[in-house]
Length: 241
Length: 241
DNA sequence: CTCCACTGGGTACGTTGTACGCGGTTATGC
DNA sequence: GCATAACCGCGTACAACGTACCCAGTGGAG
Image (cartoon, rainbow over all chains, first blue to last red; front, side, top):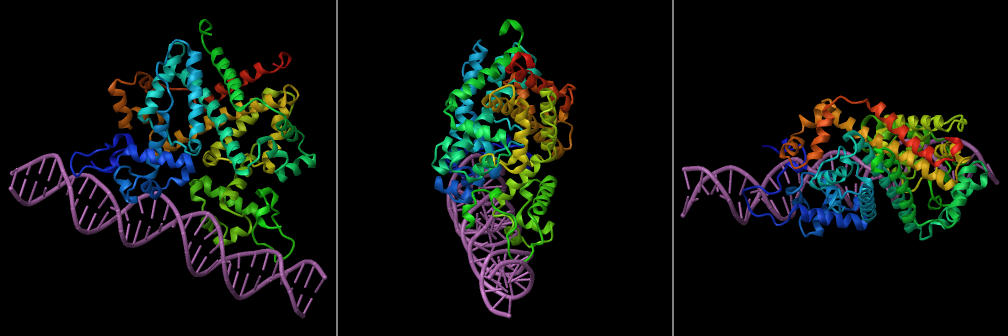
């Protein structure tokens, strides 16, 4: 069987039968790559850099992984494994989904580079499969598979988009060394110019509002999450609200 | 004023005062880059390729644009300009938001590479600013700026995530040459193996469901959109439902 | 007129993913 | 036990990338 016949990573066996024992492993390589990406961004996790991290030659990695894109798939699935879904469904769907959403958000914030990987199609790694089983099991008894998919997608997109925002704002704040409220009106001459031009009243309201003290990001997230869960509740049979 | 002082693209003037007339323009370069990205993906829009497209030398582009990243920002803002928000707010918030959502979705499907650009912070180009004014104007009279931002984010994240899904599915279908329903269970030995293993009952239900005939993607989108708009309605003062 | 800020663009450098091939190692078939 | 084929780690090499630097030419300001 040639390499081309493995349509995705998860089909390709890690260890062959014959030949010398491999020194490294997919898990070790993936781990190193995640470590680098966490610290310096996904684009810093080059093949050479990852190899150096584990003390290997650059080309050795290709004995374990067919391409960098595939390695990124491995990394993404490793991240899915960080989301704790043990004991789901527990019988309390609202608690289950809250725990999942918190876990997903925390994972995104630990590994912000995940925002830059776009899955061509969900690659169905082992961790993602487990997640699907447990997570969709939560509403499986109440709604059709179709509706379940829609509701879960709604929840995911809320968590991901709010994490995206938090990530990019955190990066900008770190880069500029200013607090978020200072950032907009004071240290950004462009925004200042727009505000002073008077042509953008609503944009100006947003900027002014950003100067006020606000809920913490965490509280903001939880508030929005409750609203999303309310929407989900509205889609369930009345006896399960 | 040195280049470094222009904190973003929109501050940097396109045309200087003195010297020979430039042959090209930012708009022309951006247009060419968008054309290439539409046809072959964002990664195909390299500086050399864009330059060749308009008959320029590669390095000439840097007279108009400080870096490729900045050019991508220009491209993204150009896309925002495709979303028609004239006449908003019209007084019928539901119609306005529906029109916006349709426009956003259509734009994403015309330019699927937009899914791969992650804005570090919203870069507030002229088209995006106009969009903000018109779009947030729709609910501005009914809710606070904070709530408005949250609701608009909710709408955006729904449209974007459903567009993301549609894009990646379309790409996979195009690559394999199979219809979507065939794709999963028949032409994907990995999925088949997972189903046959019996360890993933819910995943299997999803696969089986995918074989059934379904609503078109368009209808699916509109159905989900109505649900999102219902959630928005629930957040408005009762007299505006 | 003289300047000199600007133009388009050629050359070159550092970095990337990875194809290829080498010499050594090991499980398998005889 | 031994030849063989499959596999190991990895050095070298290449094409493609973004872009720094430099140059000769150009045209408005003084």
